[in-house]
Length: 216
Image (cartoon, rainbow, N blue to C red):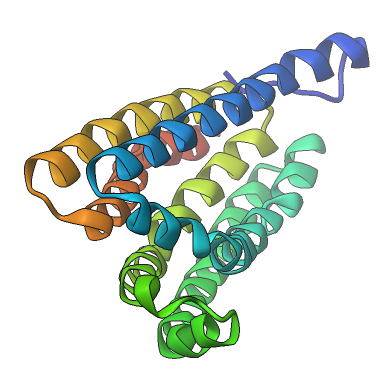
């Protein structure tokens, strides 16, 4: 499913590459809404407020970590464009090492400073503990988000935007199932919502990504 985007008519190639990205963003928003509905319906408005209050922190921490790891694949795309097989392998290997460093740095720093950040944002006391529990579990699972986004970016770097879409859809469906199991079935509250998110991301088809990259 690799695609050499340096050859052929640019417009059809770009459209073929971008429609899975657009569809993935739409699907992401839909399953986020379903996730919020489950928390609000079965845990309560306080829990929903706690989860919502951490949105800015998630965007900052998870966004920074995944953004950095995704940026490491720019060189992979350049190497693929000039058909440098050895360069592709080296860039992926270096990207993995740098992503590991980002994971360690962001996980440790976010967990150590999380209570201070919540205080700085004036998180209400009645939802503070739920907010802290939720965002701490999410930050502890940064490795899952970074791993998926890095391998997805590697695939996109070689012109494959369809496999990341498939894994995203699988993850979204698994997240909803785990939400129902952990929140409704096991009564784990916001901790269940966070665990469902981390587990579903961790179970995305990373081995398939690795095999496709190695196949180049």
